[in-house]
Image (cartoon, rainbow, N blue to C red; front, side, top):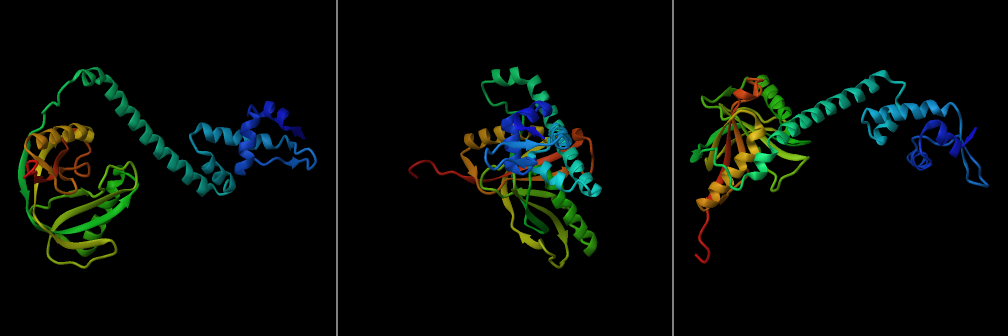
Length: 277
């Protein structure tokens, strides 16, 4: 057996971290002297340390590593953990790519003193319609596709007919911006009457007056669209009158090329009365 200091040198893990692993139940000393409280480890525990370090290098958290080591005899369970981490890495790479693109234009962004009105804002009425609707709390905005898949499966099951103008809409219901656990509703206009199923409902929605902006290309533009629309609303004495929503005229499901996407960003509006009126 090895005292904790010696094991620290052999494992290249600090004593502080070994104690932390012990507290988590991730790597428990093989023997603890009751009189001195000294921790002792065995050579075979170096293999466990090496597993932990390798998984940490892959980006797994200590909590997840503990779960994985408890299930290491199940190949299927381990494959699931690795597939989840692979998906996370892909998202991280996408984020890094976006950050790289932002860095390329950072100088121009910092030197800009006014809002660039590159987007044309129009006031229009979105008409009343009968829709299929699915509203759920999803992990992030990137998971919106899950709602569309569920709605599409139910439409296929009930042979739902789309309206002539389907109004493919995603509504963002949270009263404030959230990074996770977001409240999103997807809707499509339909013809006919159908049965509600689980969280999927068929309902009538009223018409609504909005400030509308047509966006051609990727969703990376949405922050600039928000900025331009906010400036337009301020200049024309409008306020937000409800949850913002998007109408997808050409979506990723229709065309994988972001250059071809067409999104109508809609901002429900109310006229603001002058102060004192």
